[in-house]
Image 1 (cartoon, one colour):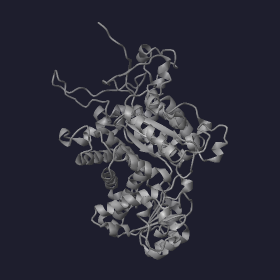
Image 2 (spheres, rainbow, N blue to C red):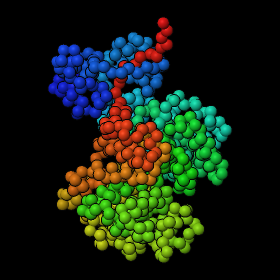
Image 3 (cartoon, rainbow, N blue to C red):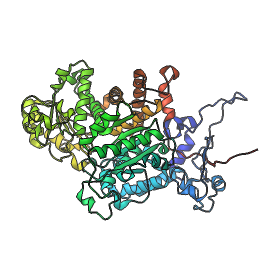
Image 4 (cartoon, rainbow, N blue to C red):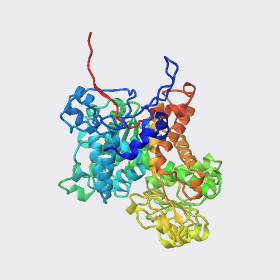
Amino acid sequence: MLNARFLSAMKRRSAVSIFLKDRRYLSNIATDTENPIEGQAYAEEVMDTEGEWAGCTKRFLAPLQISVRGADILTNPLFNKGTSFKSGERDRLRIRGLLPPRVTNMGTQEARVLDMIRGEDSLIRKNIILEDLHDRNETLYHRILVDHIEEMAPIIYTPTVGQACKEFGMRYRRPRGMYFSSDDRGHMAAMVYNWPHKDVHVICVTDGSRILGLGDLGANGMGIPIGKLSLYCAAGGIAPHRVLPVVLDSGTNNEKLLNDPFYLGLQRKRLRGAEYFQQVDEFMQAVTHRWPNVLVQFEDFSSDVAQIILNKYRENVLCFNDDIQGTGATTLAGVLGALRVKGQDVTALGDQKIVIAGAGSAGIGVAQVLLQAMMEHGRTYEEAIKCFFIVDQDGLLGIDRINELTREQQIFARDTEGGMALQDVVSKHKPTMLLGMTGVAGIFTESLITEMAEHCERPVIFPLSNPTTKAECTADQAFYWTKGRCIFASGSPFDPVTMDDGKIYYPTQCNNMYIFPGVGLGATICGAKIVSDQMLYVAAEALANFVTDEELQQGKVFPHISKIREVSHKVAVAVIKQAMVEGHASKFESKEISDLESFVARKMYDPNYVPLVEKREITI
């Protein structure tokens, strides 16, 4: 029996109202109501309420030609519809009898999977259910993500993805993505053609050396590219056959993995130095040779190599590092939102005193983006650089250890007070913003937060480390210690906080998924040659401007996650416009597109079942 509420809605809503209210029908339901022959309006489509067509449109949907048939279709997650194959499809695709006889629609399938997920208490068990579906039916998997992104994002991404990575070897079931190991040196140019899809738009690659705040997980880090690319598809509208998750396996320094009989990666110490960078370079040449326009996203590379790799390729290859640039752009959007919450203009960014705990690739990346933003709004370099106090495990970055710092860290080394402890930095310099990217849980102590709140009416506190167990402080702690005055955002999600007086505060998530799907969508649509700093800056602005006045009044500095596809659309449009301004858009110029927003919306993948037909060579 089909869901009664669903059937009732089908009877009430016209095809046009479905189009307007349910994005899943964006590309599937015609809205032209004029009869070209008689000049009369078409009757509204009345959908069947029973049988195999219940709840399904019979309007024209462009069929997809596939080169497989029979049982092979059912084992291909890109084409498999499970029990939703109609009887006609079952006949023409030669799968009649290979499925249970009852035909169910996508809505019923979705409800069944949701019941399974919601019946589990464990996030990792929910993740296993979702990833099993991912391996069987990608269309349904992404439909569920699109329709329930708030509920599903924490399951497929932070905070659960960290545990999924740690258990990756034990839970390995089905190949997904590609592995380029140091044993493959000399073969990468050829082995890249083993990937079956010709039109890859986005590659997410990690070497597993710094997975979230968990450290070196080696080949088990594959869970990160898989999760990221699921968000590219669901949030960014990039079709699943156009993404490729990759692990660059150069070994691991994790002793536990080196001695684990079930570990699936190379069990030897990591390559470093010239050999390592040669492996990276061979990989980059191989993938850009086969897919010249592909976007490469570097993910979770350790700080000692991340910036070096980015600097080598960023001016000549379409690529970016999400931990450095994506985190920077997302944090900038949150900081701009925090200024709006305070009632200040974005130009006040240069008036802030910003303490960043953590001087790795993420912390320095955020500092670089904020520095550039200050200069964008009229501050000189000398004025802007004075706003930053960056602290690592050895204290405040200072020129006394300049030779130990990377080139990027040296920019922020202060002339005096090098080595000053975090608590002392806060006490002496009285910051207005405290950003955490340490991976050290609880480093934002009560004494630190209360000290900051004493001299700042609305302190901005962003503990950004992932997963939740690595957060510098919790939402409860930040709101209680500041008596509800702080402006809070975190890397992983936290529940609303109810204070003793009954007032409720709503923490928002400062997560890169607000930025990278839209950047990838925009860059690939316009054929961008590179991802420039200015393209990332306009992406941050687009995100910041999406936050409503009502959300700002509640202290929220990021939009609700349910709006993620709309956010990605706005970010993509901004990125394309900037790429055209800078001359980086190789596929078109602004004068060629009259309505860029509609053009981008039409390019976004929307997961729905379409008719499948066997590709045949027709001869006359």
